[in-house]
Length: 170
Image 1 (cartoon, rainbow, N blue to C red):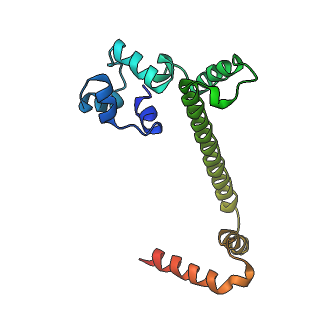
Image 2 (cartoon, one colour):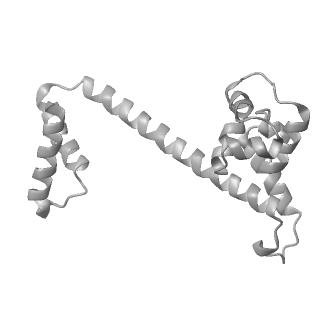
Image 3 (cartoon, rainbow, N blue to C red):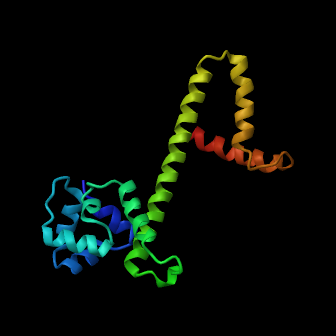
């Protein structure tokens, strides 16, 4: 599957802007973003990869994020060490920004995967507990859940707890 939609959104570009750039309709851009089969003509693929400063392989989904990041790192390695970022060409700056976005996305995915693993493991541990143990653990979890409040802010904590309780009863 191609990465047209992903790249377009990251660059905060509209379908209309891409359509105008290529001289096609917005419907065509929408179709290209939705289709899994290759339907983008070669001439447009090259223009799109140039516009987004990525390789054709990356745009079409043949290269993964790691290979794209590696290619950008290789480009950076070829630069003169005395150059500063203000001397970088705009293509390379755009690629660096895309790499930063990819790294941020990957980190948030890892955090979310880790969170899901913790929840699943915790659930499996709780299944084996008897009622007294569950009540003990529930108190600890409740304190952790509401940990944004200090013990001194019990009134604020109680109000928040009441608000949540009302929501769940609806």
